Image 1: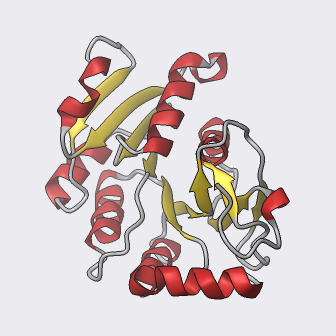
Image 2 (image 1 turned 135 degrees about the vertical axis):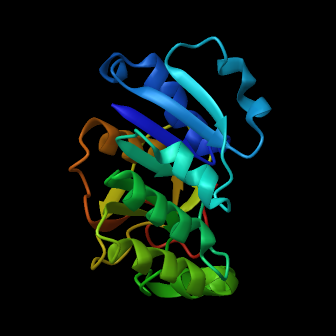
Length: 216
């Protein structure tokens, strides 16, 4: 498999990269890591399974070049810009290059699915970017691509992998989760691209359910 990770210097992207390069089940995965400043990942220069490129999601030509020849694309950044250029560029590039499978990160709360006081607080926190984030999800859902929207919880750096997955029409369970857990969901899709296909999923530590604020 050829996997492209865009915004590849983010913390979750780096966890995914590390696990792919160190775990036996992913030895057949070759990585292309795209980011605005490729020198940040220069330490991968001698790894035969890694190709580091400069790829700005705001640049349609760069995105199209990055996508060419890939099997799966993981976009490790939320598109909450008013013009949704990142999502539009990604969809256009994948359609042009005949690449079908994409995983795109997003906010929790896209569908008012987060209950209680935490849901109210979360809406307040994400209000400025919420409409654009919703449009990003809608664009993917109507793109004809095989997509997964990842509705991330409020993140922490706890080492454990522990989460409950909820689908688009389910109440969100939990308020926080570890970056390790989100990376684990991405790796489930890498291992089985049919997992969560054409769905929008949330993932959070169920032990944080009922909390009013994020758990760090």
